[in-house]
Length: 125
Image 1 (tube, rainbow, N blue to C red):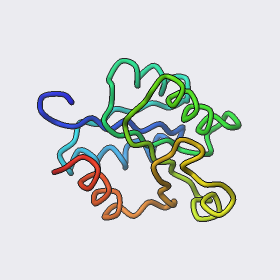
Image 2 (spheres, rainbow, N blue to C red):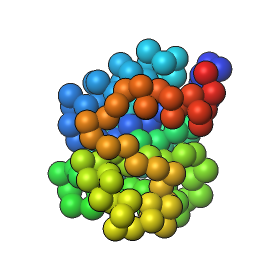
Image 3 (cartoon, rainbow, N blue to C red):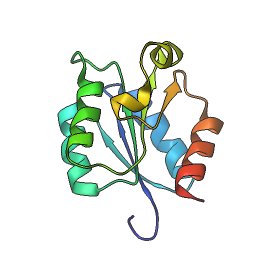
């Protein structure tokens, strides 16, 4: 929390997605933090202690998203972690996302109403 608002961290190598998700998160009343790589995401996580984390599955480095999720789990993360993926439904079928350390999966293109409803459900208004 920062200034009485929950902090949402989004990690993605796509600058347009970072900007778009940021607008949605901030318009819903949350503090927005962003990172463009898994390594930067871990650093930002440690600096900001976010209340909610969204990680893109497919970044420039192979497995960067899943590796970040594993690292967050290893350091004792308690915040909900959602993967953003164009293969979201297939990911659910191929592996239990809970086994990966995920709370859930958002399908690309992300439905902004679903994103806001999930944030509200997990964090409150």
